[in-house]
Image (cartoon, rainbow, N blue to C red; front, side, top):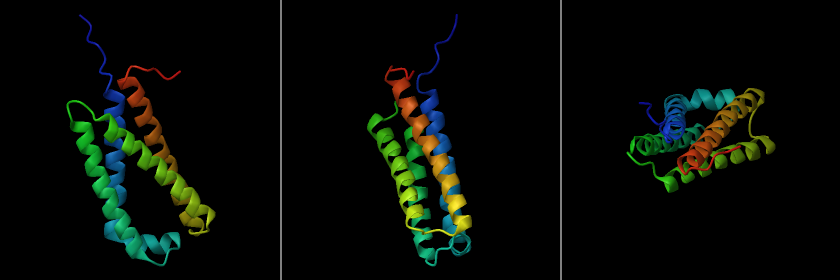
Amino acid sequence: MRKEPDPSRLLRLALRANAVFSTVCGAAFLVASPAIAGFIGHDRPADLGATGFSLVLFAAGLFWLASRPEISRPGTWLAVALDVAWVLLTAGLLGAGWFNAAGKTAAVLVALVVADFALFQYLGLRRLTGRRHS
């Protein structure tokens, strides 16, 4: 007898991967905000410390969402929206000249990873609700 595939698998994987990435980035911002601020060309390390704290809280929420027997759709939509907001804010900061050359490269790479999380969480939600993306 063949076991039915778990429709929440993609969503759980995307949420967990996003949580791990957010935890690592958040911890780095908390522990090394002065060094990171210097690397990206920002003169206020406290901004990065606050961002790091927020990312760790976000990651805790993502781990919680992924661990529930039934994944909260509104909670996941919020995660997707926050990921999209991160990407848009990054674009705005890039446009405002907020980063030096190294910071621009790092910001674009992080934004691309976050955009991928948003995409896979969205696709996972669609699969969970039974609507296939074609």
